[in-house]
Image (cartoon, rainbow, N blue to C red; front, side, top):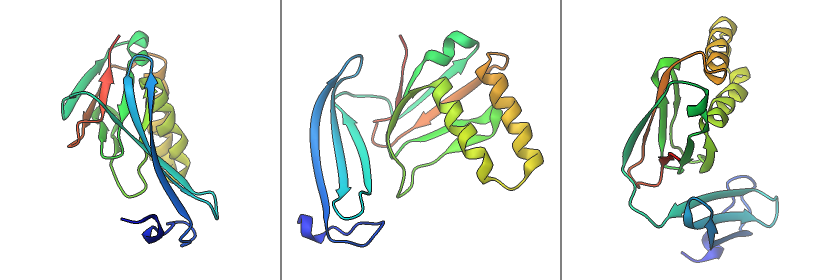
Length: 155
């Protein structure tokens, strides 16, 4: 695909630049970063790939505060589920990759709570997420990713 064929999803401009770069990230090794950037409106989206063979599905048990430090690599095609909290993160056209830890993932979910209308349900979920962040709630996180990019990094 020629760059001139790319259309910005935000402003419909044909001024979309794409590229890749490879960087060495401590604890992760060589990472290939793919990006799209619109020169007209500034829209950007990043994704990444790893040189490695990670499982397509993985699960981790969070039993206390120390486990909140486990790192999570989520590729744009990854699904993250925390069944005990009723939280799910699915891939989609605007899904971005990220690297965070368990606490960071829980905080991402907290930031999304104001988008939901059922205030009673939101208050209940926020309370349970905060209990999890404080280490008062045991729970599990599962990741599945057909591309094998998403995974946990256990120290």
